[in-house]
Image (cartoon, rainbow, N blue to C red; front, side, top):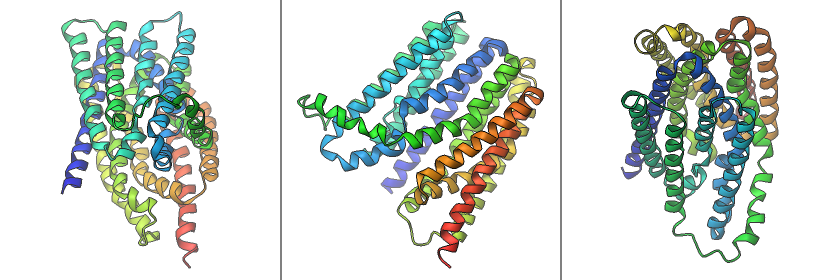
Length: 401
């Protein structure tokens, strides 16, 4: 009962955070207008790549490292934080140099979104405090939404100062979570400096995962940058809102997959081809329903919230629905793939999908804009999921025969 309550609370907090984040983006889109919000979407897309480099696969591997080094938890967490903050600083500095002739607000958005990678998720997993972390994460998003709403609607100003307040708020919550999870593991700074060098070996072992994640990220965020280069800011703004809607649906899908994670990674005996197909169908139907809700929401936002500046939002959402539907089952297959197939194959498939995505994006996006983006996303993701399904099917079916 306690476990179910913790999970329900965690799930609720995650959805509150997602809803608040989406509403904040809608407010920004309304306040700034499509032209400037399109520039902000570009900043967010680049920050999404930055998050992968800042995190460096720690969310996938860090928990295991902590289990293997229980007597050095503080040292490993300390080293991870030094690395992440340093990379965020350098990437933000280079982004500032790249945008030195533009509004500093764009750089502030980059820093704010990039800081998402600083949350100690692996540490929370190790401490079995995911629900606590998600509560604090939801609380930060609620306060951020209040600040954004007041800045845009009450004070009628949302500039660099507003974003700096949001940055310091996020930094406060990140520091607070680290303190909360590590307060019982601190044994003084004696030997910490010498131990950090060894702790940084974590990042040497995550190169293949990071490369694969960068390839996969290109399918969405890299292609968005091609949209930015070949079309005006209005197209980029519309696509940004549509992708944000899809991220909310993706959150539901990933949270449902978490129900299966334990049995998948522990290699439950009842995992076979029937199990895989049932789980794909299990996620496919609600994904279809949610895709229809997404389309309805997009048309509502276009017609009654954002107005003519964001014309075409509903149609772009329609073009993304096939991808949303297959994504649910694809997440199940990916989890099974990662748990049972060597990492080098995962990286190879990611490279292939990246290649297909780049070719289709360069061919279709300049002519068809956001619709070309949707088609290449469906094709490249669909290819990746199909290959993974084939290899997982081979692993569980042919080996059992």
